[in-house]
Length: 110
Image (cartoon, rainbow, N blue to C red; front, side, top):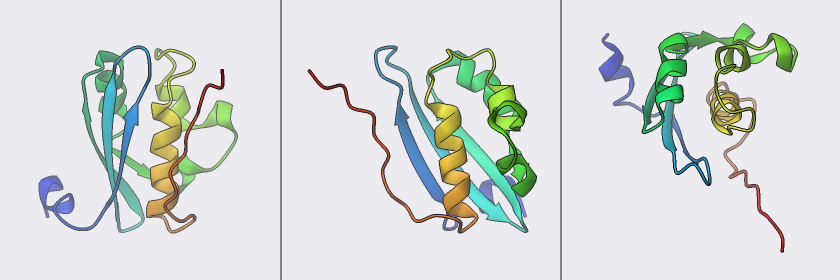
């Protein structure tokens, strides 16, 4: 089965608006035989580079400490407050059935 056909079936999708930088990222994850296949659409060159290392993940990439996490290690060249690595892990959490879908939000209060 091709990667493209994996993404035509049911999957978890998240959209990230990274804020003032104006970068947007669509993350699509699909659980295929206990592996997470990831597809990215983004206008951010750093996320494009990050996506090259994160096309396929498994449950071990979801666990462990934040400093040892493969997603965050791969994102070391991103801006330190970039929300995309967290969004990848949240989508994985839902796709593995470890959480329900619920929007996450950061709001600035005046």
